[in-house]
Picture 1 (tube, protein in one colour):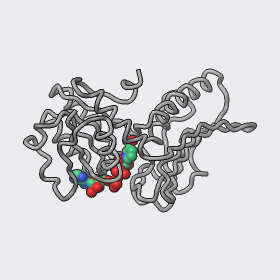
Picture 2: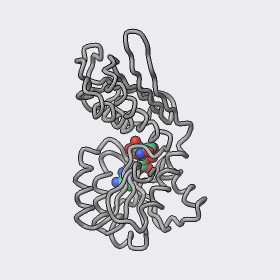
Picture 3: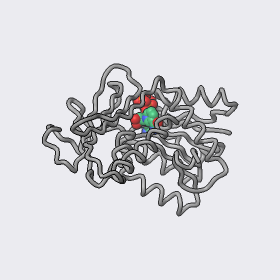
Picture 4: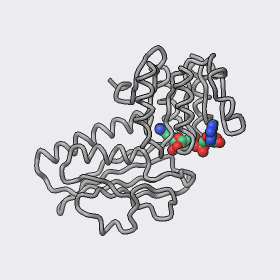
Amino acid sequence: MKAAIIGYGKMGREIEQILKERGHETALIIDTDNAAELDAAHLTETDVAIEFTTPQTAYDNIRTCLEAGTAVVSGTTGWTGRLPELQALCRERGGAMFYASNYCLGVNLLFRLNRELAAMIERLHATYDVRIKEIHHTQKKDAPSGTAITLAEGVIGNLTTKRTWVNYAPGIECAANRTEDPAAAAPEQLVISSVREGTVPGTHTVSYESEDDVLELRHTIKNRRTLALGAVVAAEFLCGRKGVFGMEDLMQ
Ligand SMILES: NC(=O)c1ccc[n+]([C@@H]2O[C@H](COP(=O)([O-])OP(=O)(O)OC[C@H]3O[C@@H](n4cnc5c(N)ncnc54)[C@H](O)[C@@H]3O)[C@@H](O)[C@H]2O)c1
């Protein structure tokens, strides 16, 4: 497989290493200093582009790949309100696109467990309040994490007592659906607390709490390698396919 890496930061560098280990070629590396080189001419030699940049740049980068007819894997978080637009463009052009808010296999198992647990609680009519807490390194700019949003959507889709989510993110500038007072959240609002500290790659905890007990699902990422490996496996999966894919497709 010949790959392009778009975004040569922490993830881009891990991805380069894993591509090498798995016998693939990195044909193109794009970062801010050569961003203008991301065009059809430079992509022509590549089977797939792997994009991990910023919430401000992901949309245009992915669009450029799709318009050039290059399959694209993206993991950039904090911009996905516009993801459906690109998925539609991908289908329209007969292209190939893979997006996941988290490429770690364990996190995707957590997504399934969380949805199933919410559905079980719904069937039992049990009274549990739900909260999510995510902790990431201080360089992570967006909040809540894409993973926390997927977990919240998993709860909201299966538990009728929760309808929306709000984000308690003290000290984090770019927070969506922000609340300054989590204690004042309405019962149907699921509170996601975001914390930025040290170099933590990512910890997510979903707490189901009744008057009498607490049930917690927690996942801790030990290093970024697991995320980069997932993205490369997704790129291998995408080569030769047409359509819009996510981790659920990879895990079948
Ligand atoms: N989905 C996942 O599993 C997953 C895992 C880790 C990180 N992420 C997300 O991926 C993104 C990148 O994470 P990171 O830790 O590598 O961040 P990073 O800040 O280390 O790297 C981002 C890189 O993108 C570059 N960049 C900025 N604008 C660009 C442009 N227009 N074209 C090309 N490159 C550009 C920056 O110069 C930087 O080198 C973030 O949104 C992060 O939240 C997702």
